[in-house]
Length: 79
Picture 1 (tube, rainbow, N blue to C red):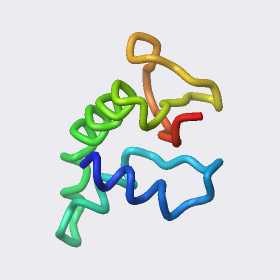
Picture 2 (tube, one colour):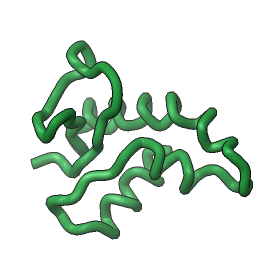
Picture 3 (cartoon, rainbow, N blue to C red):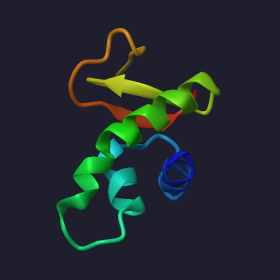
């Protein structure tokens, strides 16, 4: 999942962000809504990448940490 997140970000403008659902969809191999079951693993992978200094998590365009994040998040390259 971490690789999917980093690959998606590498293909986007450096200032762009992705949603965890983008990574879940990239990893899911079926045509159904099975990617939804991968949402929590995608969020956890994003937080591991935060810990590694690779990405930042944002809400409303502002960086948040794991204790602040509630609801939808975005993932962007670390700045």
